[in-house]
Image 1 (cartoon, rainbow, N blue to C red):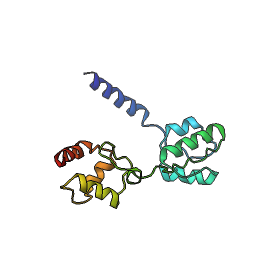
Image 2: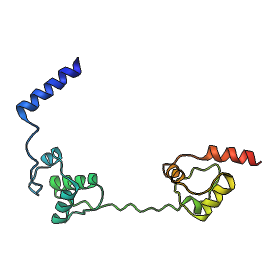
Image 3: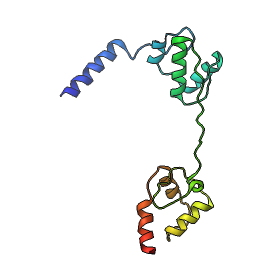
Length: 149
């Protein structure tokens, strides 16, 4: 009953007020609060960033944050580059007790799987997806290790 009442109230509000005004042009004189109330596609955000000298790289959320900060303070926030500083697990050592976090499809990893998973026949999309998502294969590997001992 409550949901029906809320839906009717929303419908009446929209009929009376509409969905709001059109999205204003993204420019340096735009209020940061108005900016946050409207949707701008990523292409528009990138174009604006390039035009005013803001870094245009990153995800849409990063661009929104940089632009809002610029509109509030005039500060140009530099882009942060996230470099992978971690070596693949095959280079740091694979073991049955360690979760594979930084997967790499290489000879070392293939040999490890062939040794502990007799039915292993290659890196199928399913195995790669499981490893990418960080699913522990320790249980499967331990079952096979017990069978080998």
